[in-house]
Image (tube, rainbow, N blue to C red):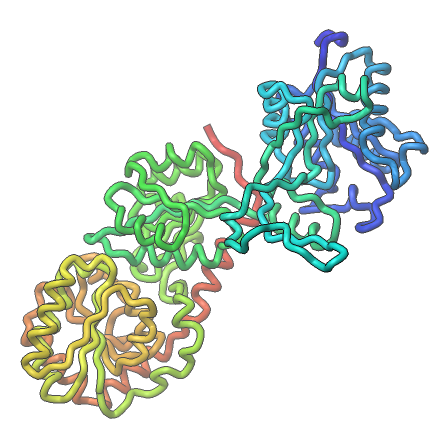
Length: 564
């Protein structure tokens, strides 16, 4: 470039005499000196012609040069704590122009104490200056709060009415991270702040200004933050267990930036996830990779059953790590990690984790239910009937018809729990009313808030062959299993060795067999005790911690390079 042409110059003021955090600008943050973040962001910004670190400290000067910046030593009269930044920046630009013969047109001040400022932020400040015709652009963050001021008569509010924060007027707080100004201001008036000012409103997490050790800790936290994408299925045909597990994992990864994507046909899962206030999109089933390519996450968690190798390889080409749950497809072989507590029929590859020790028990089963069903009671007073969030095979009604009379004769209550995707709630309610009219005691709950409460209150249960068996086993509830589909029949944990009576594919089981099995279970405390003892041999409390710990290890590792 012709040295006489107008240039965009970034100035990073970095004194060595920080009082709040000694030697702050060279302290390692996330394993790198704090100064490096601002230098790299400025150097990586398209359109920035020169990056100058202005300092009074020889060690800072040494590192600034190593990081690729020009260095200008600050004269003693400008190095005092009381000297504001405007004369420092004006002196820096004047010296730069005298030394290079270049002419600055735009001057950027980038604070080294804002390490999360990105090249995009810096470029946006320059664009705002150009597009608006302003003299100065200052970075700011939204700052709506109920504030007060001190007066001679005491403290007085700065607001007319107490309202929730989102209803307060728009207020913005300068961050100090970026100031973009026209160089002519500095030459003519010695200031960066002109008469016409625009704000560059930045996300608060990128505009942090490190002044205290608490700020430092927050910056460390934010640097460790990663983008995690959940790809989740859930429908009346597939149930909602995948969505519930993804929500549970999201709760454990809340420190990261989370987003959910549901393939078309999984609107039911999207509705459930959106109801928990997570960002969720419904995308074409064949378009997941293309959608994630817009802003590739660091990690993709697939809870979609079987994946193809092409799909997982496509994600990895974006530079994403990939974790799959319950994946029996070829994609499992090329994923970074696979967790399959339910169906352990997979190749013995080191990245594939199989078996019940990897089941993730929800928090409602981990806290406050210690000792529930420690021993099988002599009498069964309440039986739980639950067949997942959808019950696509209609097993709830099938079981109720089969066992209601036996319950009536024994004074047993039937607690029926249907999930949010249950397709025939009115029919179920009508069935319960009919059975109750005949002397049975049937209570129906749809979409319960706490499934663990229903399980803990039961002395026996009916359920399908999915994740519910682990939850019931964790509470040692003797259970009869009727599988919803052929895939569930391959679930090896729901068998006699682990304390279950598994009748196989529920739609094919004769109602008389359901009744006979039920009567044997509720009339035989020795059988129930043996079943509970086999369930007690398993400890599910550590499974979630193991899985989440390994996922967090993947997130902490350096991001792999995207591949063409």
